[in-house]
Structure formats: C-alpha cells, structure tokens
Figure 1 (tube, rainbow, N blue to C red):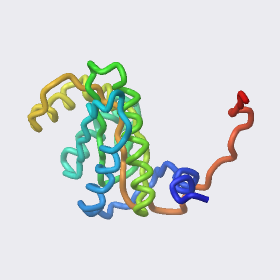
Figure 2: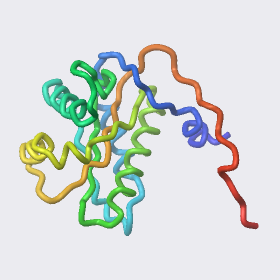
Figure 3: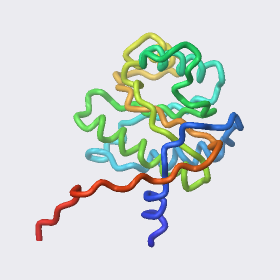
Figure 4: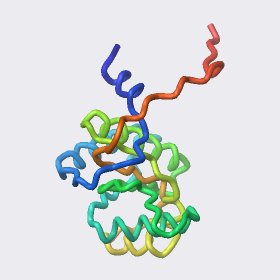
Amino acid sequence: MNEIIQAMIERRSIRQFSDEPVPKALIEDIITAGTYAASGRNAQSTLIIAVTDKKWRNMIAEENRKIGGWAEGFDPFYGAPAILIVLADKNRHTAVYDGSLVMGNMMLAAHSLGLGSCWIHRAKEEFEGEIGQKLLRQLGIDGIYEGIGHCAVGYYEGEYPSAPDRKENRVYFVE
C-alpha cells in the first residue's frame, strides 16, 4: 500500500503524552506540512502559532479547560509539550475548511515523524476571548482570525491506540 495512505490508516489521536520536549526542527517540519495544505483559491489565509513556552502553554490549557467545563487540574492537551494553534482569516468563506486541512496535514506529518498528535477543540472560543486576543497582540498579529483547532504534539506515552472498526454503509458509488 502507498506509504501516505498507510500513514492515514495508522494515525490515531493520542491522549497521553510524555513531557519530553519536541525538537524545534520536528515542529518546523510539521508546520511546513501544514502550510502546504490546500486552501480555497490558494489564499493561504491560515496562521499557525507554535506554543512551546511552558507559561503560555499552561495559560492556554487552563483557558481551554475552563471553556470545556472540566474540573480544576485537568489538562485538555493531555500533557503534550507543544501546541500548534491554527487560525484562519474570518473574512474568508473557506476559513474553517482551510484550517481543517492544515490540521489534517500537521497530524499526518507528526505521525510520519514518530510523534503523537490530537486535535483539541475550543480554539474558536479562546481567540474570541481575552487570552487569545492578548496572544495575538503580543505576536503583532492584526486582522480578524477564527480559532480552528489546536494540534497537540509530543511523544506518546503508553500503548499506541489501535484503530476501531470502520462503520459500514459510508461509501456509495455512482457508476
């Protein structure tokens, strides 16, 4: 089977990460894969914010936890040391689609590099709130962006999850 298709079949969402830092070169490779995702009219209007600073990572995790309604102490990023946040230009009608393709590329790239990843939601709410706006200001990012998702990245801990059986009756051919 083609190695790209094989990676798509094997990749799983990881929900238990070690605290071992991810080398910056690997993060850059993952981000590069994200920047090559298809986008409506090739607008390339998504942004990726790589968060490896522990203080910012924990502030974003705490905000995400509050939005999600979890108990204090829960880490919605499952201990991942790197968080790649995808934002898309809110004025583009393909913003969510474009950002979703970036997320998919990055998760496959992480898998191909021997890393685990997991799409974590609530970026939309974070970047509509004060913490997200503060981060954008600190980075000097202007514009109106919608949070699409967080790609939690790191070395997985424990047993690699197996794929659940595929549901039937999801594919139809018109020939």
